[in-house]
Image (cartoon, rainbow, N blue to C red; front, side, top):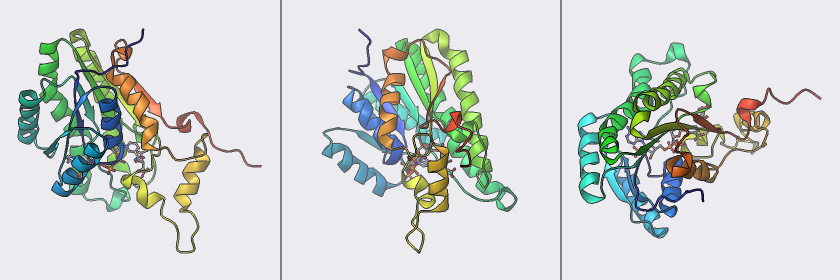
Length: 264
Ligand code: NAP
Ligand code: GCO
């Protein structure tokens, strides 16, 4: 019997206050895991705690900036004391800045790299020793279409997500012998607050040009929903994927497989 159960597992989902992180944390909880999550905003934290509770999930929430190693180490230790050593880490927290490269400041570039690439290093480094002690662990890095493709205005984000793909493979390589599997999920274009600007209705009520563009580039002919990511996350967090390591599972409706609609 394939084991998708996460019963008695402790999961940390970074940036789990809403969006993709919240959906993944919800799915892990529904598969049996005990959930901890973090974000920077107290308002987001308090709302998320209510949202988890409304689903019957007693989540542990932390105000913690994933770029700050001291805050991360303190959070991981507190989770160990209150829930136990972390079995499952989802490095989900992330930002994007859509600015033409020649107009992007170095500070703006570094902020994206810090959150989207350096932070997964910081949080993974904090949880791997406990996973080694326990004799198992699952790390899931939330990558992107931009782990494979570029586009205008997202240079920092693409550099970070491309790096995150290789960090995933390197953690898999370095810690596989300790029964730690590190994989990535590469969502396509998902309807969340992060992509809301790309889906805004135009003043005349028409769809945003980028909205129409993405639907035309997606064989599924739709934006993804956060629910589309729940099954893949449970799979990669469970014993069902114990021999899957260093893999980026793209959940993109087929975007990466598709050259684009041919002219009529
Ligand atoms: P989102 O709606 O903007 O949510 C981002 C979450 O991360 C929020 O909870 C935010 O809370 C938290 N966060 C941001 N910076 C943080 C920091 N320094 N420390 C701690 N928490 C932080 O984003 P999303 O669309 O759900 O995306 C989640 C992940 O999926 C990101 O890594 C994103 O790059 C990736 N992704 C998204 C899509 C998509 O189409 N939406 C597709 C592929 C990949 P606070 O602001 O309160 O900190
Ligand atoms: C963008 C989007 C994308 C998505 C996602 C696609 O501006 O192109 O925000 O980057 O967030 O990463 O996989």
